[in-house]
Image (cartoon, rainbow over all chains, first blue to last red; front, side, top):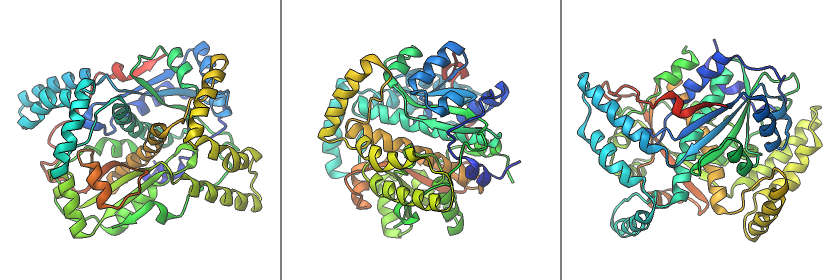
Length: 234
Length: 234
């Protein structure tokens, strides 16, 4: 069993895998861990498309410009963020809250209000988004105020942020099971959306290659900038 | 020592902390782990502003609408994504690659080319962004093609994505040390940027509250949607 710090230390993007598939139970377990990540308002805007069909995989590798990490990975998982799938999650959360309450847990009324009333307003960004923007602006002159989401671009950031949290858990989960990974952003998102028949509100966050690194797969030491560029104490 | 799966299981956003500070060495160690996360082209576009000055903290709590998680957290860390801090990192990476090579490691020429030639073009999104967009469009008609980044919005997504990866490592790192966390998006980003004197290219990704949960701090069980909404096997 590895210490958490050792899992973090061992995770180092791999450009060359040994090509062997990852056991199904490992992948399923790691996906389950990923989905325990935090997400904005617990809306779980993520999707994980595990590509196992050889013909689809072949197309996916081309869409990743045939880069070695894609070609040699044991498994390829396309991580997707959805900006409009939250309503189903919201309704499910309401159901679950009711169930939890009926089991004797204390569920604050604010939680019911949030998921039944506030969340649908918060995440609606059509014409309402422009009205919200004006409202936020004037309210914000006087007091601390939310500033978004007011448009589709905000919702894209919203969904990608939570999905990325899950992606990192996924990479670390694989590492904890002894499998390396390579998060790839080098792909054609238009062709990828077509290949997987993704809906319009889907954003392809990364293609994750997973497998065992070849001995020379992660040859370089970890390179990082100066600590004080990134850590500020105020 | 906790199993990785147990760390993931234990992490559950907390709304109410016991208010006790987190030891400095724990925070520093967790920040170090966060910065070992993956990032796009290893550009490390993250910053972590650990707010320790009481007056600044007081302002920060107000900017978070005085929500209990902010008020009661032992520590508050503002996680920030930078869209224009990559050039310093890029130059540092080039230096490090030279050093690594001089120590006898094999560094592929492509790595030097990438950081000296390609990356500056890839991440420049002024007027060049529009030219790139046209180029990608026509090239993309015939073959798999990158589609971005072509504008500031793309760079924002780019920086927030990598920063979010680090945020999840940070939360899990604290959990592995026995500290709970609450990632907050409920804050006024305009006032927050002013409070911390952040540059124009900074995006406030989340305010992370950290500490020990009060016994009733995470009262509800974990709620998730149906697995097959999120996991697709293709």
